[in-house]
Every structure is written in C-alpha cells, then in structure tokens.
Length: 202
Image 1 (cartoon, one colour):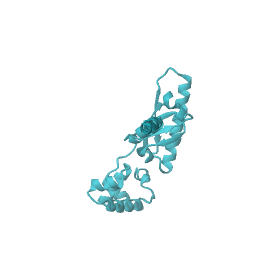
Image 2 (cartoon, one colour; image 1 turned 90 degrees about the horizontal axis):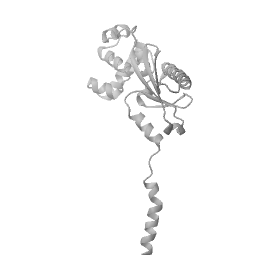
Image 3 (cartoon, helix red, strand yellow; image 1 turned 30 degrees about the vertical axis):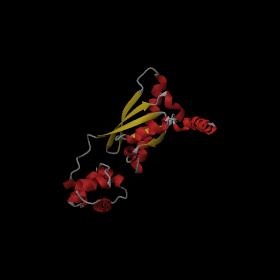
Image 4 (cartoon, one colour; image 1 turned 180 degrees about the vertical axis):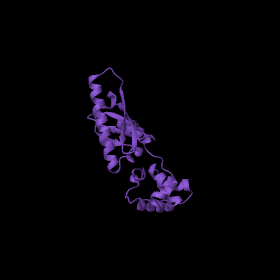
C-alpha cells in the first residue's frame, strides 16, 4: 500500500515534464523550415537572424550579401512605417533588384506571443524575372561557353538552384554523373560556386 502511494506521488511529480508543451520558438522555426518558399526571420531591430533551406540557397556569395543588406534596409523602412502609422496594415511589401533578379519582399510583423523571443518579423521572398533579362537557352549557352547539350541543361538547372539529386532525376543519370557535369559547367563558366551560375549566364 505504501509502495503504491509512493509510486503515485512520483508519477504526479514527473507528469508535468512528460506533458510539457514545446516552446513557441521551436514551433515557429519548424513551420519556417517546412515552407517551400524562401523565408527569413529577423529580430526586433530588423537584422536577419535565421532562414529556411530555400532562402539559404539565395544567401550565397556576393549576391547573397547584397540581398541580406536589401532585406535589412526593407525592414528598417517597414519598422519606420509601422512606428509612424500604428493603425495601418501589419504587412509591408516592396520590390528589390539584385543583379538580374527582382525579389518581392513581404514583411509580416511578429505578434506579441513571440516578441519575447526577439523575433521581429517573418520576411517572405518571391523571385520575379526582370524585363530586361534576355532569355537563356541551351544553344546560347553552348555558343557562349562551349558547353555540351547536357552541360547546357545542367547549367540552366543550376541557375534555378537545383540540387545534384534533382538534376540527376531530371536527366535520368546517377548523382555522381550529375556532380561530374556540375564540375565541368563551373570550370567552363570560370566560377567556383554553383550559386554563381545564375549571375554568370545572365
């Protein structure tokens, strides 16, 4: 009898930890990571603090630095608008151009429930083609850079930030072969990062 009561008391002491609810920050980060579109989180001062996988692909190289600066500038403008007009819309949207890319940046301000975690806003990015960008074709890439037809296809897919696995699936080849094509494309374009392909072929 005493042993049974002791085990019940122990169960009562442990139960709050067993049924603990995950912190809201974990839930928010999981939500952001699950999204297919590029999303970054900023702190209350408008600085980029974290990002999901699709966004991480954009923040590589010099173009990535410019994109981060442009987003933080957009955040400062959005925060200024919010301070001046507290009754206005909670979201702020504008277009920015980085090289040959145009991005629509939408800022969604964080609610009071995550304010204690220093999350100021969620910033969603949508890439749009610029009007002055000339179309890139396999034949034009072959002429400009001496690429084979297969390498031209790989270059276009690299410019779309596709992984080696995705490239392999689309071409019907092994990942090893896709990686081999990628290395040849980078060498012929005279660049070192797959994330610079879009800039190089534009």
